Image 1 (tube, helix red, strand yellow):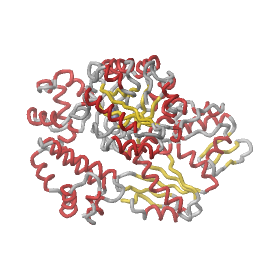
Image 2 (cartoon, helix red, strand yellow):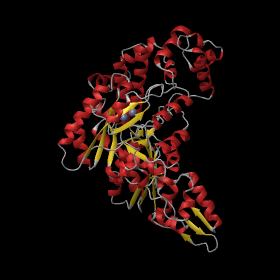
Image 3 (cartoon, protein in one colour):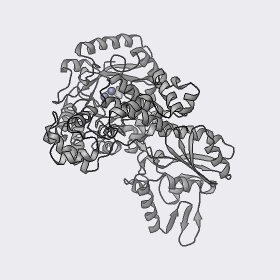
Image 4 (cartoon, protein in one colour):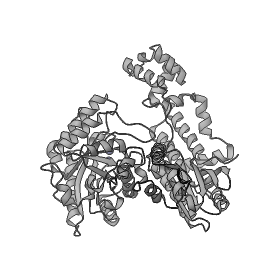
Length: 582
Ligand SMILES: [Zn+2]
Ligand SMILES: [Zn+2]
């Protein structure tokens, strides 16, 4: 059969996982298939080819069982396990499992007790009031579900995250820039503006020989399918199902075109209207003086802005949020940069669910150039048998102390904790334990489905707690999976401002939480942000860059971010009594 793309293989493994779950299989098996699907989706090389070469188990999370199944898929066009399950479980049930807030257990009950197997049947049953008969359902949940279905709730969409898009862009841009026919090349579109997720990846290049570059692109190993190829444009699909468009333009107008294709649309429309009022007409090819007919073209994007009377605007700010007015007055904020950060204040070790030891983390952080870090393993309130009880926290404080005694180069190691904000708004650990810690992140992991006012009350209680330094991943969103709980952002931001509580920008690529729009509110209220990686493995130390992009999208300066300061200066911003003993 024709080779399947990575995304297609991943879809089959997701299906396998969902069907197994509906069939009541043990959890680890279901998780193994989902992990495999995720890994396939994120692999740049062709999974099909790797399987042909017998190299599939070189990928993380892929063992012999999965590799064998992919081999079977190549040879037979399907998988025996999948066919068997299809005979037992109606495949349309998968749509139900993928509805937000409705898991496999419920879907199984709906099927076996009410014979519901499709979204249409589910909606009809909700309308007839038949769902409330199911144990654990109730009238409120029925109404919620109906409202959701009527609002067009669709199964989760797959999105391409910023970190994945950046990686793809780097894979393309590095060799492209080295190509003898290429004079300049950059990513454009929402990726260049560092949006949290992107639909496709746009690349633009300056060259006098377009056909050479489009021919180069379609021959690259990451290309699964060529959608179109011309003299100045080529579109391809990668093995992980992302569309990448390359546009080749003349160097003389490169700055104009880069500005145009970076967007956003709203930003460009406002800029053109503004130019018109000043007797200029802006197109992607140049800026025409409407009186003289003279056209201004430039290879340098900054010159486009200067010609129109603005200071150059960083791509992260081009969202039509008032940036043009600021640029006109020369009053744009000087945005925070990756190099400004001095430490990381949310990191896990194998004391909870991190993958590495305390010592390895300290070594990696020092090698990275950090001046300080806080070790913030979970409290046991997170559940799933993961976190620390009070005595465990005290033992870890001692362990941190012992490591600290070996540090003689000024590197500061803070004993911290990511304490859970429980369903009633209390913190999982007693106050006397929290008071012994150098750094406390308070996060909400449990009871996320409470009504917005209850969530708000819990976050307020945490913000007002004298031992809490920062609210971790404040909205609980998971990019491409869930929006996060609703809460009164302005109330939380006001409470943080009043109490001197920091707010985190969590740089995990699937979180990027606080989101930029909310971070703007925080900055307007005078709250300082903390950019943290929430690292669970050493490679995650590099995620700080993603957090910096979010802060820049919010218009944050170096001063707005607490962990750009040396530790002693950061201490001065903290709540009374929250001094660092390090
Ligand atoms: Zn957390
Ligand atoms: Zn964490």
